[in-house]
Image 1 (cartoon, rainbow, N blue to C red):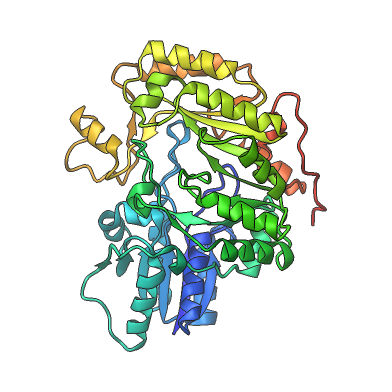
Image 2 (cartoon, rainbow, N blue to C red):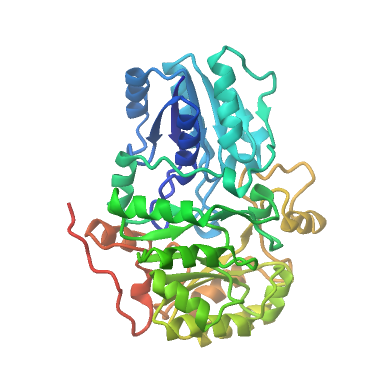
Length: 455
């Protein structure tokens, strides 16, 4: 069956991200014998006409549209993406009589409302590799589900999570937008952060991929696609079960050293572990610190203290690894006192970059959604498709914005609003610089990656 997979994501903050989920579905479908093409709406300059031409040339018998994000979860500069998905569905239906099926992380959060809003024919909830293959196999025989929403599925085992079918044309585009490629080592999250949708989407149990397969993917990206920077997209790279250590040891056993980064929790690390990371190429650590004082951390469901954040940051610094922290103000229990305490704590951090968010996007089925419901911030019938942000009733929104703006206005490495650097990063990527580039803001630290030749 001829299947066109479409990535609808148009987010470029802080830089364009390769559509890994789409490519993993493509790999599963090709392994099942289907003919698959991948179309990236962002790579095609958000052009509906380019989509029409692709449909005319390929003549797909089935369409799959990936919905990665509902919005940009940034209260200071809100962007809503479902209208883009709706426009894509309309164009597909104008150009073809084939069925349209939605999927992806964003879709799975509010599937019924997105399906209704966009007018697509079907939607897959949860992990799509098995369900999309089953759907395509049946569709090839003319059999279509009587249910518009399919799933949630039985979660795949780690061994059942296949490698991505990295598309050369798409990869070329994303490499020229930062030279960063995505790799997934596992799914699932064992933590209970009140705001987070990862346990909802991926489940509360770690399902690790075979580390040999993970490193095979890295070598493919390095050798075939000439990738020079890897981003591990796991919800938390240094999971408490130690699955990440198997990947590091496999990389080091095979002498695979490539600059990489990922998301880290600020506890459970030591000299030996960070040494392993450094040996495999770790160049920058993005730490999900989130709460700027112990009270805020406890209310967010974190299992660590601000002292853990300080020690983690210092540990990475000792190994010459650039560090960034992400903090959110306005969460449950936030008061004027905790805001002031948090600002002073952030200012005390050394040799790092800090991105500061105000308010927390409320997502369905999270602990925060329950808190917001009890506090009458949302209503029982609010589907949360349109962005709703939690700001503690104990702080005034205008006061919070003014206080954060004033506190960090003259501190170059403390970024508020969090997307205020995006245009500068995009210019640097166009000039040929590789990587995340926020490390240029680390006080006293020079970026470790040189500019590649810009084409």
